[in-house]
Image (cartoon, rainbow, N blue to C red):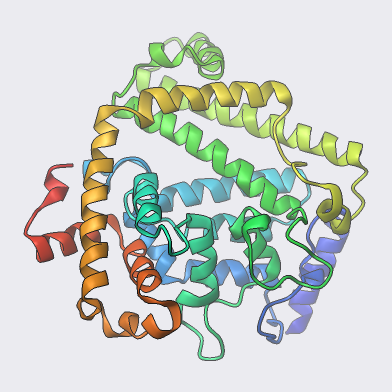
Length: 386
């Protein structure tokens, strides 16, 4: 049966770019395991992530709009799937390892708390003096320690390549490094591609959701050159289409333009840097995967528009007040009385300390579970107020 995995690894050697991450050359796992007969190392990483409790919880964690605001807005799970699709498309075009890109994309948001970035800000404040809270570091903590699915080791025992993609910024990583690597080492191009795909996905789906929620109109978004150019072209090419169809066609074109630009710009940088293998990427490939300067400027313009017209909108900011109260009340209640938490969580106090133990528990909650627990403990149904 090992012949199947070895055949896939040979195919990678034939088809992938020389500076791609090859499964057979993985830096390995923290806990040695025999290779799977039919799946490569990165395929196993992907599959392990999909089967986690943390991954399933993403369905009920906020992207921008709380789950009860409507059935059609993005959640952390749908965002993750969109990032995975875009990352795989980019990786394929650049002849990078699609399975590694997919694994990193599927795991990159596992550490997000309930209530989106508002929840992260609240937890970081509550953990001041105790190490703070940051969702990429929490995602790494989940895959290294908190998920308990295998009797032989804690966490998922993912490969180093997947873990470095999840951590996103290696200088923050304080754990053991593989031989020959340092915290200043650049991550693989696959990891860099996922970072770029994440930005493409959330800018465009937040634009879509903001229009659907009527936080701004298509005419308002026209102040962004990306939207204005492609919205005019979509209306010109499809004069009889509905506004909804034109919206989707415009966003489709923006994503296509950004992905195409990123592929061409990244390919050009790889050639200019003379990247011959993954060691070259790690040594001098910082920022190799990214937009051209012109597209980067247009992307920043779109981000500024979304910040002003969406993320600072009063209807969105009401979530921040709700998140602050729910998470602060729950965190302090559990901190004062750990017996309110499940026994298997409370047992970690000796190892992790009470604040981190409580933070792990609260950050793992979905939006609706956090609301339910708050209502049960404090009698307030804040979900209805959001």
